[in-house]
View: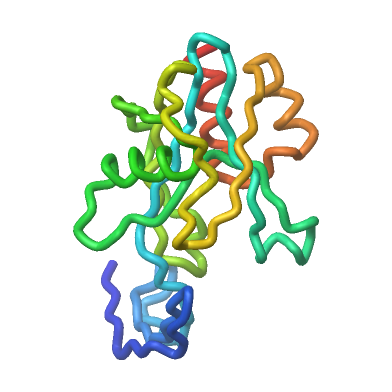
Length: 189
């Protein structure tokens, strides 16, 4: 199967970049290729980390405002720490940096869970998902995000006995956190 991007242009550049392209590709069940236009959010790659505070049996989560969730929710989302990978940044180093900025914890070792496309129908974003174990003593500052980015992040801890309740109740409702919680249930409990 072959495809070709005939043209691609940036149609919006702000916090996100939106591109529009004309594409032609082979089809599974017809001998003639199909040509059409599509838009995508060209977001870049990101990381997310499920943090387990081993000495207290708590998962470290963050609560922050997420504008896109206001259409169907209250705007605040409880999730695992995450962030965008900067140009030429190693995903593991990005994950360590994001954990420190958002939670105040210093994590030294990360286990790769998986890499996946967050929303492949409309975004180029690929997410590197990690697991890290920490201890209470690894909290080296308050966390809450970077002042220069005006981040407003609340740190929350949940005992591992609450995983099923958080998932069933819909309290955890973003894909990266659901994937991480399910992985934890299968591999660590």
